[in-house]
Image (cartoon, rainbow, N blue to C red; front, side):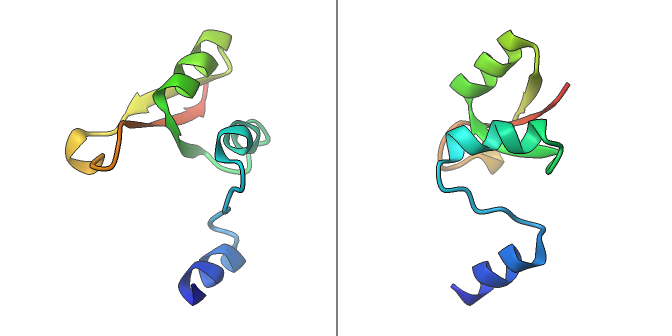
Length: 72
């Protein structure tokens, strides 16, 4: 836990509490450039034309099917 606390304290990482609600706002406020997100949310944001996404290569995406979302 000390490593996680150190990373968060550096300001380079933000630990979300309600990830699917916070991620989009973090990007729209330009606090971060990219965020990992579930495909359904990426598709929703693409439909709204606020953010776009790219897929993560399968070899690097072992725990699920994640996508990286970014500001358009």
